[in-house]
Length: 322
Length: 269
Image 1 (cartoon, rainbow over the protein chains, first blue to last red):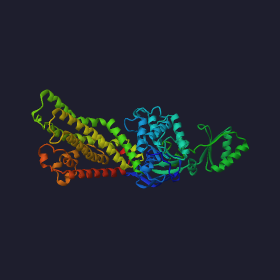
Image 2: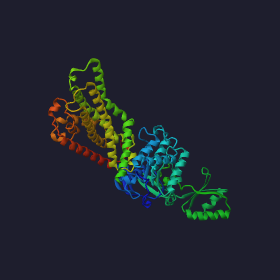
Image 3: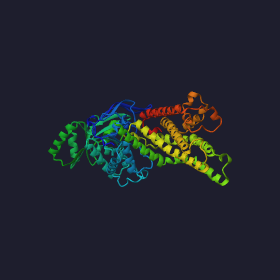
């Protein structure tokens, strides 16, 4: 009989120390150094960039060719302590044959070492968390893609892990289910848990992540808070969108400021798009211009502080990530 | 981690694997193989009922003679190919179904996973093939009656079923390892089958590297006549049992070593 595990020292986080993984001669990831704190962390990158490899290394499904991975101070090659604290929703869309959703969760909770009653309770709770209670007694083979995705999520969260690793967890979910799952992830992150997500939907990543890890061809190209990552990219001017009553007049005023390299009315964005190399100086000057000229401002918002723009700047690959 | 928790993990694996092996789609070939020896026995009874029992089976030892011949088939073919299916599927089948990672994502030590799966495979094969042996025995003795080669029928039955259980133990360990190390199932199974058949002709040292070598020393009576029996060396029970245990343990250690370093890379399969 096993009780749901208490989280070990959360401060130790998830650490990759100079980790490389090669599949024969093919590079998986190379010289990865990471220290992932609690909260929602997103892995972003195109196909083959190493997102799943990093997740599999974290969970011991793969072994590093070089370097060391620790999760809450534990090595992933010790499943007995590790998986009391870690849940992993993999990308594999497969299940043991012939099982219902409820049987699937219950059977693997028994393998976790929970007794029958605990397994019953944990199964029920997990099914409620992912909104699968009504479909629990149907065979998984008859589930839609979204339902399979949800039952995989239930399997990852059912034992109350403090580290949740989710490979493309929102795939196949309808908008309402996405909202529910995002709320679930946020709730877990708010409890101080680690939630590691990979997703190809960039605006969603931007929307839900506390920090991002941008990957390309097996290398970590940037990591941290999206805004801080963006701020370090001096080569690309910061883009600011302003909606106001007299955009043309505002454009001529701001263009006189040092650091402003472009000010144009963008019909697609529906406002004045300003590009500046010195954001702090610009905002000081901008406030003065608005007050002095009595502009009526509707919106002032960064136009490229999202992960999509950051990703494009970093690797120039457009937004076609997966 | 305490032994109690490890045992709870193993019980969880056992429960799940028995369900898959005995009740799932994977069970159909197992039952089909298990029925193979029952079919000729039933046919024999039906035909004999219509045409009369052949003279060679009419005396006191008739049932025994019939069953010893049938038992050779059970041991060499039914148990062998049944174990191929049951044990190679324990890991290999899960890799093909892409469901092995679910076990790897639970807090069970991988060595304990091997033990849980192995015991489940052994129970499943012993239940089906031991049950098949039992059924054949009951039909044959129920129909032909008569002596039992000097032993009471119940003792003889226990011996026959016991050797089937041991055969499942030995072949199970071999095929568990084969399923872990190799991708193709058919060729290794055929090679090992030929190796087992050729056992009486092998040099003494190589003979010990087969399951049938140890089983021959444990079965109630050696197989019926023929050149194989002439060449085969008798193995004492005192060599057979420890040898069998050592052989099985060694193969399980090899399985544990493999599983410890195993990675999930279904794409490569």
